[in-house]
Length: 113
Picture 1 (cartoon, rainbow, N blue to C red):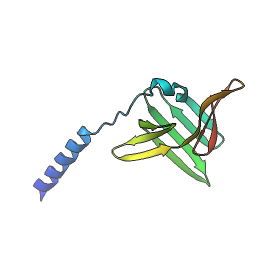
Picture 2 (picture 1 turned 30 degrees about the vertical axis):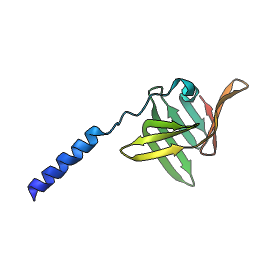
Picture 3 (picture 1 turned 60 degrees about the vertical axis):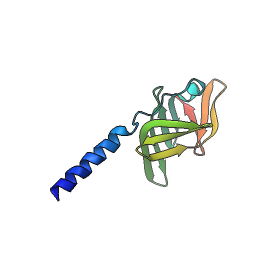
Picture 4 (picture 1 turned 45 degrees about the vertical axis):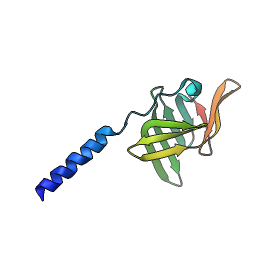
């Protein structure tokens, strides 16, 4: 029995080692996404290296997501690793209004700090 557990752990480590946990850097045409974005109920950080930190409070519940960007799908972006991904739906991509950068993600209007 112990031998099977060791074989299972070895196989699991091999699978994990073959996965790309780094994600992608933000491509040149998406550089406007980079920065710290906020609303009263959401904080979203997108780094140049593709790292994402997200926190949203809705209905008394807090949702947190951290991880690398795996890909962009149009204006949307997918964050995660090991097959556990979250798609952020961008209905208004980053744009400047009167000197303030804005973006709408998952229905939430954000401003860049």
